[in-house]
Length: 506
Ligand SMILES: Nc1ncnc2c1ncn2[C@@H]1O[C@H](COP(=O)(O)OP(=O)(O)O)[C@@H](O)[C@H]1O
Ligand SMILES: [Ca+2]
Figure (cartoon, rainbow, N blue to C red):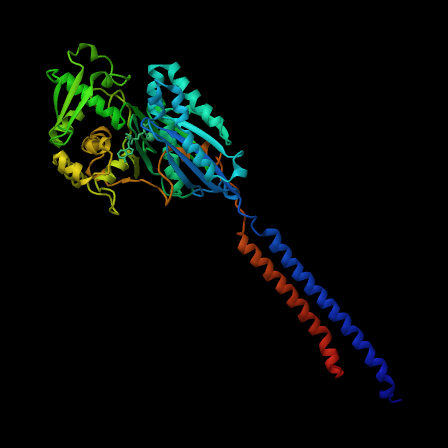
């Protein structure tokens, strides 16, 4: 019997419509689920609102104190090079060791910069923001001279820091070793050297009262224990040589030189000084020269109380007088810098900062891309020293007279220290870069390394990394969801549509 096509119509006509509806609903639900999946993945994994952390370090140097405010994204804490310097506040007046006569003032002097830090760090983060003070060679010398006065100075600065809303973490004198090590950590952290296969960069720091040299030598072992440091950073071991020469910062070195000149001279109050410009005159109290442990005795034997320094701007002679403060007559190791201090052969690139930079920058010897050759540096300093003082003063009326009058000595001292003291030859000189800032905004110096260490921001082992970046993860999730929807749609079309088409119902 031929089936009654008409009688079948109502039956066959309602069934496909119902299943099509169901399929549509199903498809819609799947699409909805896929969209929900994508939305969830995106919202769950989108970066949290930027969470910035802050840290404050006060560098209490021999000549003055600087306050640094650093910031970094909390979630990237253990990455390298993520810390920015957001503020540097120069404390007015003396370095804290200069307040030995009135120790309370050492604390008061910091108040203005502490107020400034309160403006820079958002108020709701004051309590959680650590503040550290590290004092360097000026306080090392004061401690050697009079421990109880040095302690009173530290108590005074502690009082000021404790009364601020920040999280006070300590005020202490850091050792010369620490100063060298943290300077080295700062520049290598900022240069990204800890995470690269390339080597590290050495660090040269020149202060007013001490100077540091720190680098990874080729030669092992490091012959003297007190010059040897071991670090494990980001899963790598570093054996670092460091030495801090107390009394060989540029201000103390000048006093050493003057004391040595006095000893060598006929001990008259008038001293012709080749390290100052022709026509320059400085009157100094002898008692000011012999006030700290860098220069032992000698004062009592002098028949005058004042010294009249008269410049004659002679670079070569200046170099010779400076040379006398480096004692190279004995060396108990395979090689030495001076004063019997071990120095392994120089190795790799060096970053020279603090006063190394200030002086070279003033002399226009830091502007060129590649390092200025040693002979050009020498001739520049030589020419500068020979210029009459009145002309120098007229050309740079805005520069503090104390700095301006001493750039000739400082430039010559830097050359003596690097060439004769450390053995930077013409060739090796090319590996020194004079740095003010390492990256765009961060000053080279020990403070950042100190904070990174105390906040445990440099892990010993490599922090585990996510297999995918956030963007690739979200992208992949979206892609997979789209594939899922497409497959469902395709399978629906493959298994259902042809059947319907066959019957001509769609
Ligand atoms: N613009 C400048 N020009 C020349 N010298 C400078 C300048 N600014 C700072 N200095 C010098 O840099 C040195 C900084 O040393 P400082 O950090 O105070 O001492 P230390 O590190 O030995 O405790 C001081 O000798 C200071 O006079
Ligand atoms: Ca310093």
